[in-house]
Image (cartoon, rainbow over all chains, first blue to last red; front, side):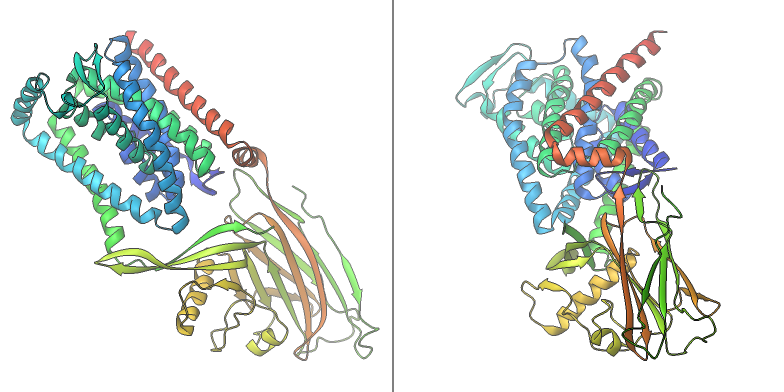
Length: 307
Length: 263
């Protein structure tokens, strides 16, 4: 059974969509990730146009990060003030990101740029996960060093416009979080990701935030970033496919909950390594698509219907 | 869907060519094709008769030609080139006012000379080296080389053919009884919406002796059409509604499962 996607303008098998959303949701629930970094390339693999994949993926992340934030919020693990400062940067970053995106669509280089960005991102994620999972002990040592860094005064403490963040027990300049938010905003708008994979380490290492508050705060600000990106894409690139988003959200929310349950039962470094291999597999596929000579070196796109 | 809606037209040309008395009768099973959620392409039936006098035998030189021209569009054709081992888009050509769908069918193989002299046809004929670019207005950009232009032109036709949007055949018109004909035209699910012209030609002695045209529409219908139109006309509210759906499902999903876990 297939369904016609009105914005992507093609028919896709409905079970393929549901299982895609379910699997990505399951992985994101299990590992506490947004899943956008897998959703966008997989949508492109099944034939969804790049612009629709990116814009719709942002819409889907809104749903999954809301689900995730609620739990952290109830436990008081969200630093709203820090989230708000990050969002100031993210606001301008995502506007710039959507502008860059529509320029790339206009000159016909969007597919290539997205492929290269995803190859870099997924290789980075995959390798770091593989190393992390294969060296559990080293991972523990690293966590200790993170805790020490909370009281370490780096360059973020010397800049002007210092503000006190009570929840994170920090007194730092707002410039670094604004810059981090700005970069995440650009990446979110161009790649259709929440950016947690970059945001979380940046918050720990650059801002020195306590690890317990990091996930909730990043999820909280990802809701707003991806919400903004969804609106920006809907109004400038017209690439948000509500029908596609609906099926992905439905299946990924269910998948994520199952993933959370599964994580409690079979948390293991083997599963983490498995995800790393999946991520690296996707990265390899992207690289091959760029490196192997395509069967058809010409590609056609309709610019405008003449009436 | 209005099926079996038949348009029948009679054109008598006894006045113009008194020596031959031929009538052209054509019809089609649909005057509108609807694209809905389950649209997976359709077959358009075009049928008719081309002799008025049943006692007259079919002249071996007379042929039927059916041409279907879809709505015009502008397309960008991009060529990939290898840069340091990476296959990236490089040169780009914009073709303006290109039919989004083109179908040419005849009862016998048509020569390129015939197509050119009668200004019919868009597709290259393999047998001939001559290519008629005049029917396409193009923006060649940086490309000045004739050979490269030809490469792009052929690629345009090829990519459209690969999407089943362009087709030229000489064996799809079925002739029944010498003077009745019928043809099934494949309308793939990728067709653009808009007005389609069906041109029917009667060819005698390599000359177009009769010509008849009619239109049909390809339209989007149902919820898909509503969503598409809404997203174009009210993009902000469309984005907002997409967001609300995400928020509601995200929130309620978490709440429902929380209860599950408590139980």
